[in-house]
Image (cartoon, rainbow, N blue to C red):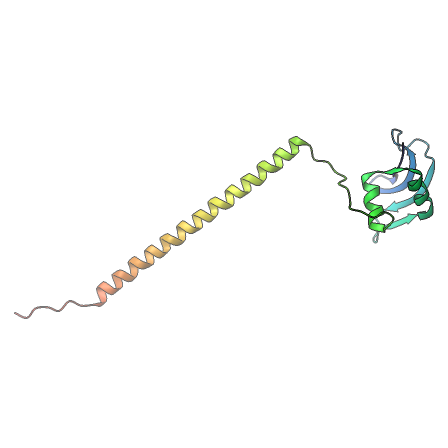
Length: 145
């Protein structure tokens, strides 16, 4: 099966990529059938050069795209559709993420409860203080003997 995918080239910490068409199970450094363009994500703005007619030809012949290449083609308008997830999350990682979310929710809940309790205590203290003030302000009439 033929696949359009990215081949990394360039220096260390300065990647540039080629869009190549090759067999799916071959290494990307192996001889490719054709170079379809290049992509430099490190420049600002990102440089993307594509041979659109050749890409359309290979897609019409039945070549597949990798997820990242599919997303780039959708962004450029070569393919219509939704973007694919290019990063998969393992079940183990998913469990860790869910546990972190649960911890955050529990902490927020306890903080909210503590804030409500502090607010209620403040209201009770104010009520007691105002009750004391009203009691001291109203003098009791003394009986004349």
